[in-house]
Image (cartoon, rainbow, N blue to C red; front, top):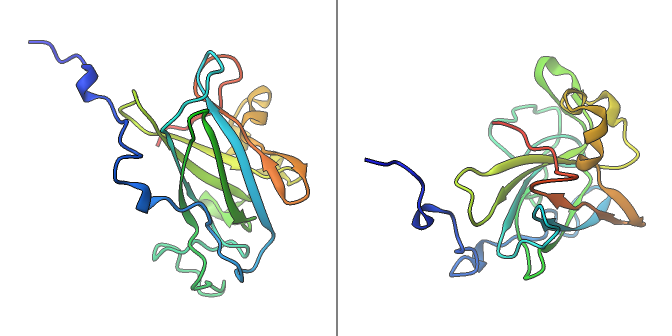
Length: 187
């Protein structure tokens, strides 16, 4: 008996079939404290082709560095009721994605060491059975002192750092395979 994966066992293309109500492209509605930013990018394969019908799930802290989660019990940091901190962003037919949020504050990592402001990103797309996990860091932050980024070889760190295209707008492209591949983490 063979236990090989068949095409019927791959993920998708289900994201646009009845799941539009789960799309959340504004992680921090107007009125939430923090520096608002729009993040745009393109999800591509090893050949540079855009990956359509994929989803990026984003999880982040608020501008003060607290996650909207029962697991974050740091009561000394205010939690804003309107702040979602979570979003689900689809790619279009060319692999392009866009969402709006606020720049998160520093959060403590393991051993209490502060982490640079970042977004936690999970990628879901056709043909993969396991989600891909990565991070997006903000430009001009002390990312060289981030304990997670420090684990990434210097020559690959740029794949995790967005670049500013104009005030309030960042560009972060995600390459799932091949040259310039984005760093993905095991979880």
